[in-house]
Length: 316
Image (cartoon, rainbow, N blue to C red; front, side):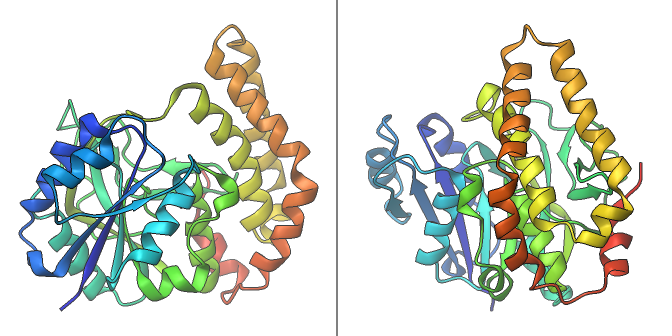
């Protein structure tokens, strides 16, 4: 039987923990095979004391200082005993069959290093937030199904580029082969970066349509923080992970996409989020010399052809 470790990064998310942890206690998957790990990122809202009292079966990993989501997930993975490492946002509520569906797809597709959940909005439960991630040839990740009413249009166990880190399962040997999330990204796009590295190693990602969970939108993050790190990390992930022949092949698309980010941010300059996005983009570009040093190590791991990777990229 497949042992599952559910890793929940938490920063001042006490108000969301009852729906999340309560839902894990109601999973139809064999409870004895489920390990729940809460990684607390130096919260100041008594999250740890609350979980210790209300959910004594949960393993708690405490970080000494606020270190970011990537560090937290990696710490949880090091403490985990499962064959599947499942990353779950603290502001989610999985349906009872969620874990069983993830395990089922992982078993059916042994070459899948990642299995993506179907994420729906917490307050509009018929509306999709993510049905697996795609990747554009312009280097911009695509959020499949976002804002669409769920009518079953994404109910195939299809291959996707990766899974949203708010609810994704990683096969342990795939996770260990990549080293997990890149902690230098701090937060945002760490899942996209890992999806790239898994693709380069030859691992697939699969979508599990029956693995349904409900997600509050950026309940413990978002705003200017999200805008800054999304702007910066988008540039860094392209520079770090996209093979050189693909950068050259799609260079025009990449430049046009980044120009659109700049143009839209300037057009909305009075908004704090727009200024943060532009600041992040500029920081990303200024950091390229350092990122190019990381790039060499990533590209040396590639075990699939350029055309195989290119076939996964979307042209829309």
